[in-house]
Length: 346
Image (cartoon, rainbow, N blue to C red):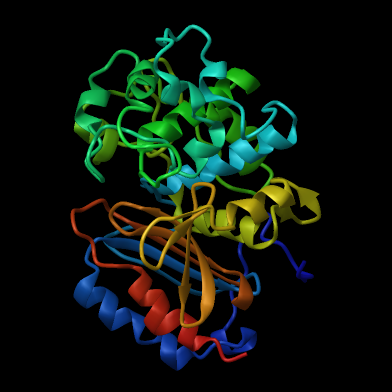
């Protein structure tokens, strides 16, 4: 564990890149590329050795503005599940998912659905009937019961153990978290994650609607919930760019914050170990993407539109990028690959 000379309990401290072993002339290349190719980028923050070395905002955004970080929500939910496991509220990741939904009626012949575990949801290795990357969000948002809709799809088609990216599976994890803690993911996170790390506490939004604009567009606020009041497990969390960096910094420090344990260290380590091969150069852990750039390992919480939290443990580096959701956003990892990692000089 790295010894820190300060913790950003209330505010981040800033310093010149050279003070923490980075080259400011390399980082200077970020600005022209962002303005040329990344028009939906709202905020970017780079932290090395716990100090902010680069922070910029665009499109009239600022440090106090919260952004819909889309599927970055999944990695935050993973931390909450890890806390529940650490508390003994979830007995094992090999617990069957249906054990947590005893009211759900399943046919005796549907053995694949009955065999799916919490681990399968965390590692995206449960089967679903839709084609890759074509999850029926529009159907789900119209359902009165999102959990039943997700359970109905779970286990249909494919086979257990094969990577299948599915957001509704993460929503089932949120439902399980509420069943074992008695609190929504938002409430649990405020108490156990956001508050202890100095992140913004997220208020309830009882007036939330379920139109596309409320769920994916300009009206997204706080942490979205389904019609039953369950926090969305796979999308819909809003964070400031600074708080995105705080979450990455927490994981970079093994889940501890200023000497206090927030997320079990074993959970952080397990989350960042490859559980399944997702793509040619990417593996998947517990709702985290795992890859390599320029010979160093990177750990990624990513969301549509180019929202990312990139942790580079070997370099003690965290990068947070907040963006407006658009189709076919330019790859944010290009910025890490071309400028941030090459800027490190020690």
